[in-house]
Figure: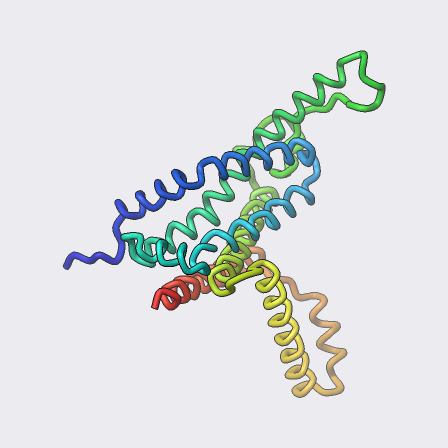
Length: 256
């Protein structure tokens, strides 16, 4: 039986619509990111934080037009199902965004290293202002000039963990962007903090109720407990799938 719930042609047209409407904005955005990476290219913590924080704003404001009456009506009148629109939103805010961040990081790293070495060789510039440096790929955990296309062990696990964490955070703030009408980032952030605090209090109260005076024994034993990286990645994937499903139903609910 033929169904109209999902059609790849309509999904392709949704992608086309997005890039036609926001081509200039996307070009400026990624150009700025490439320039930022030129200066942060050897600072792994700063680059990782930038990818997460910038991604949060990107995801939370991706479907912002649904919260405005005129733009919202136009959005819901697009001849595509909510599943197709949600698929595009997930693909753009998660996979497309992550791939583009890696691309602009490579461009910024190459341009920044080349420009820095070029300026360091100019005699008319003050000594010590620029320094010669080799090309490094610190975001991938590499300190040599070769791109780390083949990674094993801890380096490979770092990329997997970072990617699954990134997807989970993006899915959470995409849900916040659909749920809240304004100040989506701050409201989602504080909502997460409140939920975490309540859960921590609840768990502590349950442990206290069960163990009583033996609580210090549990505290000593928990220091030796470590989650397997694979289990942690699976949990993050389950969370992001949950957020995606809730986002879909919330988007459908807003249409009604």
